[in-house]
Image (tube, rainbow, N blue to C red; front, side):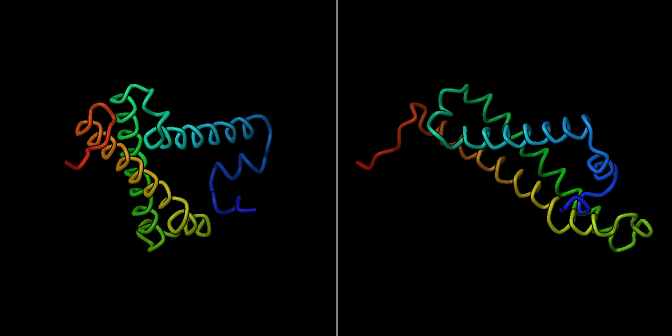
Length: 135
């Protein structure tokens, strides 16, 4: 199990189990599914039924938050691994965060923000949703 790669209070909560751990797991899954649906709404035709500015701005804000969160955690985690703050309490978990988990937040955020900006530009260029045709 990869639980040891999480570390800290979340690892302890998951190991204890119980309703709080289950609710946290459900909340994490729900947030990730919502993020996936948001990304799909930007790219799929059914997303055109949603208010475009609200969809694009929501995706942009969430993308920027994820990018800053992931980027900051990678930088701070790398500094911690280098010993900038003393010896890490959970070095295995910290290595996993710096090398695997936190870059995914950065990557996801950058892609989501890019998709939001691209969709907004395309919508402004072609307000009726059609593609430009060659004369």
